[in-house]
Image (tube, rainbow, N blue to C red; front, side, top):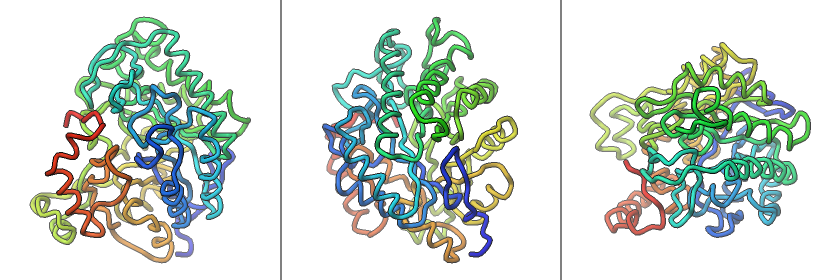
Length: 406
């Protein structure tokens, strides 16, 4: 579509994106479960996304040190041994004209790997999993910071176009930022300023580890989806400090979570007719969930900061995607679940596709995180039967994954 605002080029640091559509990072559960190395199926997944016309890809979260691993099948960037696979990944994406940012992450106390000794700022229950681990020592914290720095260097060596730091959704950086999970009273906690020090230190370490102008971005939990937690009065000033420390862009999301649906709402823009078409029989009564549910936080950031903003969270219609960009509330729109079902969605929109995407946000793809490779479980329809058999047969209970509380 000529002149479509979604297909105007955009810049993040030194990287030029061919359009304003970004694939948001999501777990794939497709790497080697022990080494964290990429597999052929994972390489094919990313090549398919790039050939589908997306402007930029943010990888699934890459664990920066072994104790920061979230789940089996997660890709690592913790060791030089993973570099050959990461280089091949970048090459496959570049072949199709997209740019790719490596997402650096540490799961903190939210790790769902049985037998792992995670890291947390304080010994309090993780809101999502309920597990409590010992508070990290100064040495533990310094090692984690160095792990982020080393991972950033590996991302440069692998040829990534930028790095994206995961500081949301209940993982380590967001745990340090929240008064609910950070009860320290030292350099790393005790008041809003000190609770923000770990995130700032990560940005500074990463920025110092990459070439000048190399894009450094961050997914920021702007609020906690847990009662009594973080709010904008704390995160907006913190975001300004992070930009001053070297961020080129911020992707908005939530911080601590009670349930995965806090960051990935279900049944967005799904009315009764659409629910019936997609066999969501239990969803045929009731109103659709709203689109762009993190948009107010993006708008607040744009009003305060001189940095690019990426909006993720429930963009399900082409009209909403365009409105977000045209309004100036965000510079880019990011999607994860719609591109699981339709990896060529950007190409379809460029060719004139209008209206709703096919994804109904049923979240079966997220339910199977750590259990099965990333895929849409509603198409082909046989996968719905496979899901039912796995669930009724106790597969979720038997798998080597620490369950969430909800």
